[in-house]
Length: 107
Length: 120
Image (cartoon, rainbow over all chains, first blue to last red; front, top):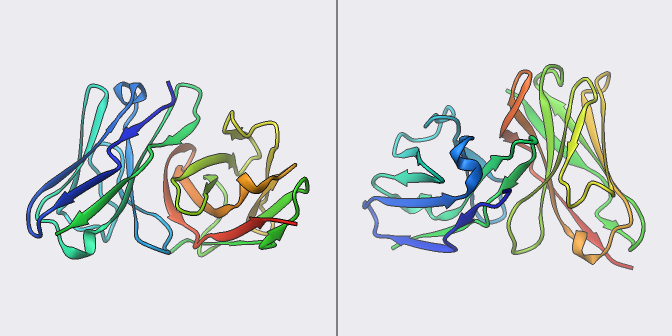
C-alpha cells in the first residue's frame, strides 16, 4: 500500500523530547526519510536510511522504525525546530510517496 | 556542493502544458536519479516522478498519463512537462536529487521551488 499516515499536529515544550510518527505498510520493508519544512522554504532532509543525519543536521534529531511505524525524535526541542515535518517512503514498484505532514509547535 | 534551480513560466492556462526545467550546478547530473515534487498552497508534498541520468523514468501513478520527465546531460538539466493542466495543478514545484549514485532513495538537496499558477 502506498499510504503514510502522520498526526496533523504535535506540540512540545521547549527543551523537551517529542516523537513524530509515520505509519504505513511500506515501512515494514523500506526505511522512511524525514523532511523539515519551515514557512516559505523548501523542505530539508533531516533523517534518511537507518537513522542517518545529513551533514549540518543537529544530533538532537534521530530516527527509528518498528513494524509499520517510523518515528522522528527530537531530543531537547528548540524554538527553531518549529516546522512541518514530512515522512517519505517507497513501494515495491519504486514509487515514492509522502505522509500528510505533521505541524510541530514548540511551546 | 550541488545546487538545483527550477525555472519556468509562473502562469499557465487551463488545458495547456506546464513546462519546467531544473538546472543542476556544483556537480554532475550523471549517476544520480532526479525527482520532481510539488506542493499545492497550504497542502502537503506530492512526488511527481524521477528520471535517471540515462533517461529511464518512473512516474506517480496518479499523474502518469500527463507527465513527461526528460534529461539533458549536456546542459546538466532535467525537465518536467505536465499536460492538460487544471487549477488543481497550481502548486510550488520543487526539483531534488534522489538517493545515491545508481539508486533512488531520499531527496537531498532540493531546489528553492517555483510557483506555477494555472489560471486563464
